[in-house]
Length: 127
Image 1 (cartoon, one colour):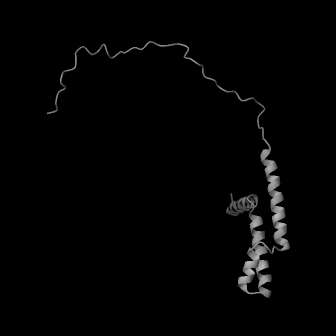
Image 2 (cartoon, helix red, strand yellow):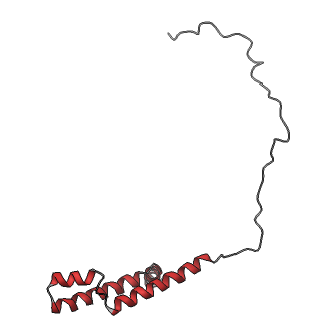
């Protein structure tokens, strides 16, 4: 596969993910804040312009549109999460183990017959 196609597909994937997580709203909001900051700084000092831009009391038309559209997009996303995807038309089979063992096996100690002497008392000490 040529390197350019691979690079293009990566950038396409990054762009799709950026749009999927709502990155375009962040970019538009940044542009709106920058525009507001420039507009407010024409009539007042920079400190007052920053205060008016970020206090939430003086939103511009672009900020109002961004807030309205991003909230309506979030409402649509909530509806999509409720949908259930059924890939196979089969019932799920659950395995239920039996309540009690069906057969009991006798306990056999095959090594006890091999020991024909009693252990020494007290145990031997290491030299």
